[in-house]
Image (cartoon, rainbow, N blue to C red; front, side, top):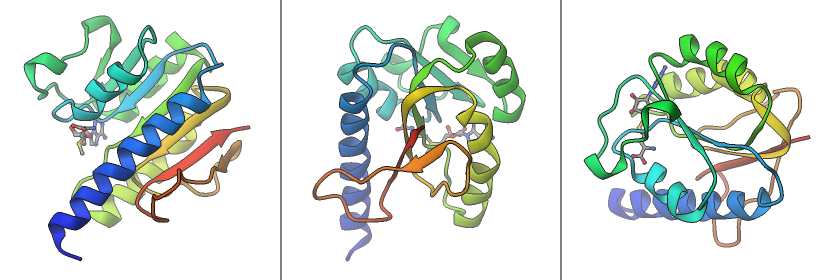
Length: 163
Ligand SMILES: C[S@@+](CC[C@H](N)C(=O)[O-])C[C@H]1O[C@@H](n2cnc3c(N)ncnc32)[C@H](O)[C@@H]1O
């Protein structure tokens, strides 16, 4: 498979998983959490598929397309491990959806980052909340794997539920 095909499949998997998460979490009140604003692509899609739901965003900096910059009150700016404790104090365990897209080209570094962040993120989730992650999440108490949407290959994206 060419790198272009692989990139397209990854983005298709991300889109399908976010839309599945939106459906699964429709009955749960509370914000969606976007970890990794980047250029704002997935933030913009979450806005489109979650009308009326607050989307709280975490990143080191704002480098998004000007149309995709979250309002200041929905933005936790800085390193995740500094902002997560503040978010926990502000939000408690209320989030309905968490999307983790904090990976880089460094696979081992990205997996280590998510492994460290996932238990803290789990503490922000409401019962039944859905997690979508670009990296695998394993062995986090209270998070159980979900099946992927039809047509999405195993390993392209990861979905879990807070039980
Ligand atoms: C792949 S990009 C996100 C892409 C974005 N979801 C989109 O669709 O445009 C990853 C983002 O994660 C952020 N990030 C990585 N590690 C972080 C950390 N420890 N704390 C805060 N943000 C981090 C980076 O600054 C970067 O903007």
